[in-house]
Length: 236
Image 1 (cartoon, one colour):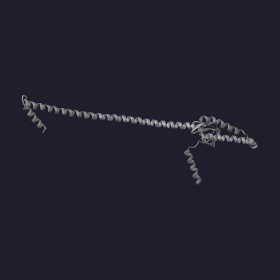
Image 2: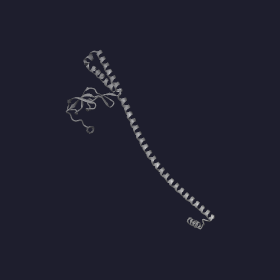
Image 3: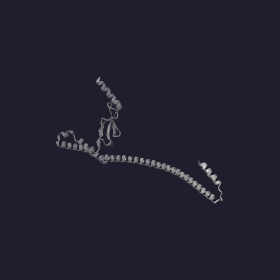
Image 4: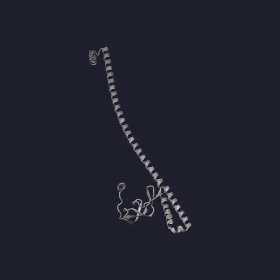
């Protein structure tokens, strides 16, 4: 229908006489309408192109914002992980500071404990039985030693009792070996100087003598199996 109308209009215009004022006016109106139509089409095409351009620009901005968001999220996660590690490290440092703050002081006090023990051991046993004053003095020194050890223990310092245990180089220092075929090798048989630990750290290793010449110490699993066998024999 539009093509037929355009053909009809074109045919009508071709029949116009430009020298005729009325035809000239009709031709002018037709030209104006044609220009308006072309202008409208051009504006529509420009608007469409602008809409497409705006859509592409919006999509690009969205992609850029999503990339920025992902980068910021990664930075925040890394920062949160760093802060958590810092919190744990600080907490551990604070705990260590509280647990081991008295390390140097406690190590100095060990010599006092040693001197108290030497004073007690230096008193002859027969003199304690005959001299009541000396016996009272010895009991006072023993009470002082116990009080000293209890005070150290309240601050995390414990006395090592390695006799009869397997030699542990982390807490014991071997001074000599004692031949003993009845005991497993590297069993602590004598304590020359008491050792102490603070928390899970050695404060002063125990000076010990260890056995040699005996069988090797059995592993925990073998020891348990042997114990179970002995129990079964007893029940039988």
